[in-house]
Image (cartoon, rainbow, N blue to C red; front, top):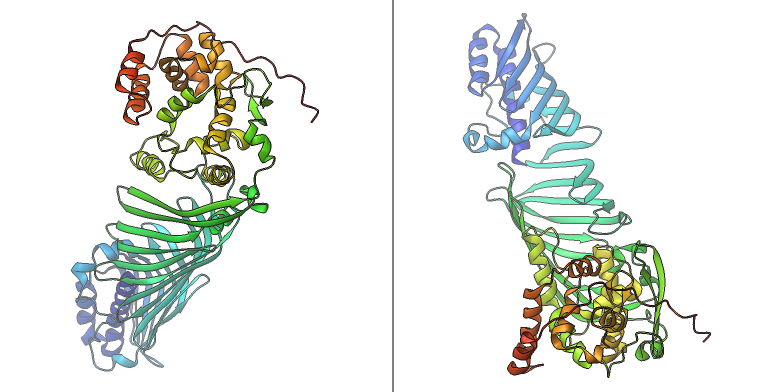
Length: 544
């Protein structure tokens, strides 16, 4: 509110000088204009008569005015027309002007207290962008300005104001109302909207459905401290920190703690279609720290007691490893695939146990301990994104990868990650770890039209998964997470030796292999077939 106070002060100073002239005429002329110049005001022209004076094309710090007219009869009135105030410029000079521009300014001559000051057509801007336009009303004896989308008043010595405008900030846009009221402790601020729309390609494929927004808090002008609560839909958070308007500088922390999982899902509307049939419990949390400019941020996630029910069908089939899912052919076209006992290339849990160790060592060391998601992996992915990595890791566990491959597409959005999480926690609650690993080994993509480790082991080594050495299994895992390009690089002889070494070392570090076993695996030769062949075609659908 301080820039608005200065703006009111500048206009009132200008009016006061005009009023002094109207009341004192020739004797006051020099004094009035000296008073205006002392505030940094200048003008292009002045016309005066016996009972009036008019200044045209006035300019001052952050202020332009088309005309100021002061008349003495029938009563003292000052009319200010066509004023434009640049609030950012006023804020930059706030410290220098503090004390020199009280609001309202002291009258320069006796009798000015009763002076009426009218204002027509005031425009407010911030760094060249219009905030409010066509404000009209009175500056004296009472400050009361209003326009099509804003108002500024002074009631019992306190500033009040509101602003209605379209808000667009990053991925958020809304038609919002900002209300500000001055109090002893600072400015009470409230921002509300009934139609907040969040839209970003990393958020969801389409803009989210409109959501209600409410931000309420206290802003301390001296020091810039902000304490507020924020509510989007049913999700509530606390917002605290420092905000300096000019030069623009902010350091804010947003804390959303113990938010019901179901409320987070509801934010995404029909872009999480599973919400219609799933019952989800538990809580999510997020602490987001933002500073800038330049913009830097760090996010810390939290979760507790996540569970979902109602998404999975045919649990007996999942336990057996019998599934049908949508995949892609070599040209990226949709393709229905099947896996299960008795079908070509199927790898049972018994046949793939040692292979499963290698998969865990590469993709999800915490697999045997977590419940479908791993906050440490999510934290690493968020840290990479905050550091500017254009392709940060997904932070997905093996269970989440399975959920994505079985039920979802490959879009890289938060909506898809949320859906993936819903499936993952139900998979973990419904299946043993060995069932999850068996499904993963049989459906994961490892090259163009190459799905499952059985066909991949045959294509690259002419072996079954049970016959793979640890080094050969590690090679197959290095084809992830981009199996098509990874397969093509390997066909050209570009093997990820360093990554294979890390996987084998993880086997040692986790105790799944002894140091001697890892040393032998590292010394073994790796003999690849030069060209991977696609998996055999699927047999006719099972009539069951």
